[in-house]
Length: 241
Image 1 (cartoon, rainbow, N blue to C red):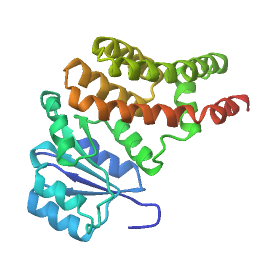
Image 2 (image 1 turned 180 degrees about the vertical axis):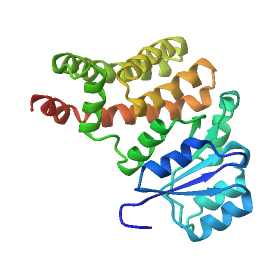
Image 3 (image 1 turned 120 degrees about the vertical axis):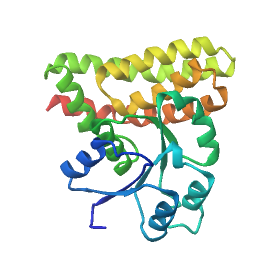
Image 4 (image 1 turned 45 degrees about the horizontal axis):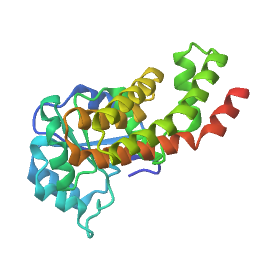
């Protein structure tokens, strides 16, 4: 693996979604390895260290996940994300219990994969300039509007996370769902797909009443929001330039 190269393993049983191939073609910092069955996957994992593993639900069995997460494995610290169809979303809790780090709903666009890779390369979330550029593009470079929106987010998101926690502690699941839905709408409007992903997961778990998955989904969303708000000064300072 070249210095700075991001090694991505895609394990998919059926035809390859073209967005993965497009991703490897337009990003020279990504090396994409494809595997189509369990034996091929295990051999690949034995000899290559990856930065991220995307695993088709059809191949996400105990043998593969355990092999990755074994302490002696080259990839024991590599995140494993299971790709689910919308019809399979109820299986998220099962795959998390199996040892997967997260589950994402397919199909994944090239833009979403881009942000997933960027976030993994920078595990505390996007860089301040990335958030800044996303919202400036959204507001057509209206700095005053961008500042207003960021200040509103920095004030509201921590309060919403606290309110969700209180609602969950009191088993007020509908209230938690309502707050999460509002939070999800805010970050989606801004185009922050990294935050949107975690908000979606929690909202989906609550709406499906999958309460075993709610705790992990809430924790992931809380971490993402805290990482985002920690960049408040850097983001607002960037708007002054």
